[in-house]
Length: 57
Image (cartoon, rainbow, N blue to C red; front, side):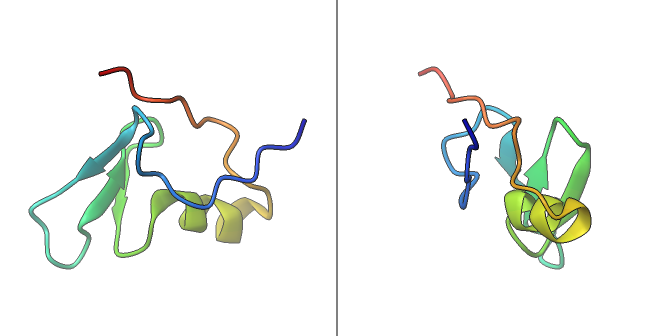
């Protein structure tokens, strides 16, 4: 099944930074970005991020 993740909110690897130039980050891939990390993955690889793991509360 192809996961078409369009938002990282709710993913255990997503985090918000204090950096105004790169306010969104991915702990799994280890980067910060102005865009949602899943958008960066899509643009870089051509595929949707397959590593979305729902955050447990």
